[in-house]
Length: 111
Figure 1 (cartoon, rainbow, N blue to C red):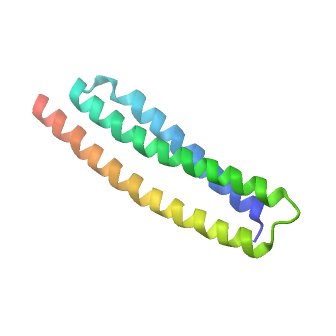
Figure 2: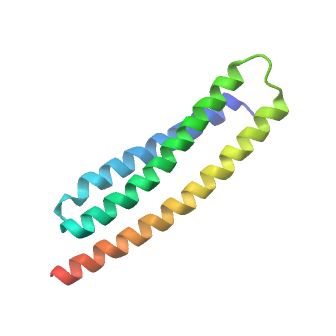
């Protein structure tokens, strides 16, 4: 397993998630202010989680570049990052589902 390829893959996932949330924030401009604030608040929480994971990926990448890092150490760190990525994916999916329901409810109430 090539650690740099795995780290690059994780970095790409994090970047795509950040881009997706930026797009969602932009798209909610038309929604009423109360719902808009609620959605933005949730998106900011998830975005902070994504940014934290991104920092951890970069930290591991820097550590891997050092000669003294043992294979067992980076494998353990990589498994931790994979676990955090899985948790973040589940949380993000749940948050997006709740936001979708809020948006649908808002449109039904305003139609």
